[in-house]
Image (cartoon, rainbow, N blue to C red; front, side):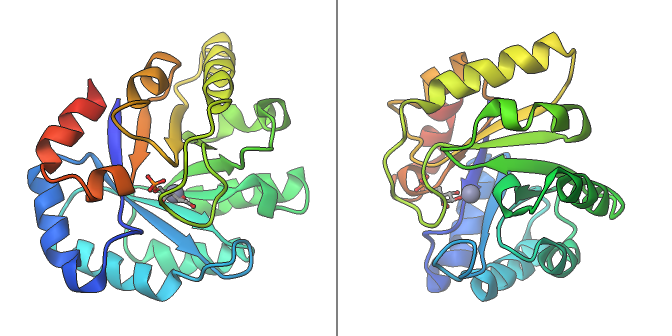
Length: 218
Ligand code: DX5
Ligand code: ZN
């Protein structure tokens, strides 16, 4: 299982050193949580833009953008300039299924991998039809909007069911799980089929990034 470290909880004054430390500790991705203050209450867009500028300047570790925004096109345009590896938007931010298809195409047309994110209350069955069109399904294990929340246990069943469907359909679609992940629950998440785990607070506050990332991957 790969690790995508969320920088949401990193203070601006610590970001450069933290990026270096996480690169040395072998994080597989940097997870950028873009919030617009509309889809979710917080607005992190300015800070995340600055963080992406630093990432572009100092590391080649791939950037994993998680858009928690209403105006998806506007934010795809403003974040593709950072050449992210993948841009993920929320199913619940789309008015209908046609719009989901349009945004999937819009991201792909920018030579960027595309992910679809679902909130805890959204069912896997609601998005089955998009699985063949996306590179990654992001299953939220907390309510989107802030870091440091508790992992929602029922997510494990969702991961397992999504994995079953992806295997049945013979797809390579990645399953990323995001929110409240730590050394206590990462093994279960992996065993149920997650291929990428997002970790924020539990990793950023740990004193040895290399050790924590290694244990999260085990
Ligand atoms: C929440 C974000 C998550 C969060 C993860 O809306 O999408 O990526 O920052 O942080 P932790 O690991 O602290 O839950
Ligand atoms: Zn996220």
